[in-house]
Image (cartoon, rainbow, N blue to C red; front, side):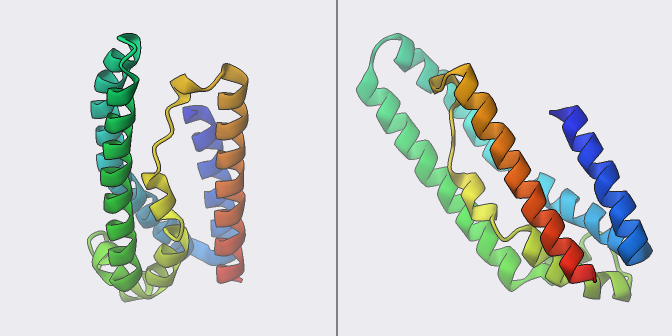
Length: 160
């Protein structure tokens, strides 16, 4: 996963430098930083719920597994939708945390809206342990591919 993200970052940066210049590369750095900060609570919620769900799954307590998963879904989805709304309404706050350069602020605000457009979907937890290895590989590869193709296309058309 880390190696594929590194390759994608190199591709993004070289394309952005070629078509958008230093401002586009700087904006992409801000966008990925905002996304990483946004994903931290979601990862923490998922990792915190995992032992509870796993213990009850192992104990064949299906009702508690369902209840824990429903609670995780509600909390994660609520957080993701609220954060998505705040980013869509006030992108200048998030971009302004990383730069005071006026050109980068102007470029980064609409780019952040595009980049975070599907953020609310990340609030839907997916437990890969409940799927087979083939399904996991297929699902994650396709999600990653679809996500980055969409983002790359949107950002490249935004730059051009």
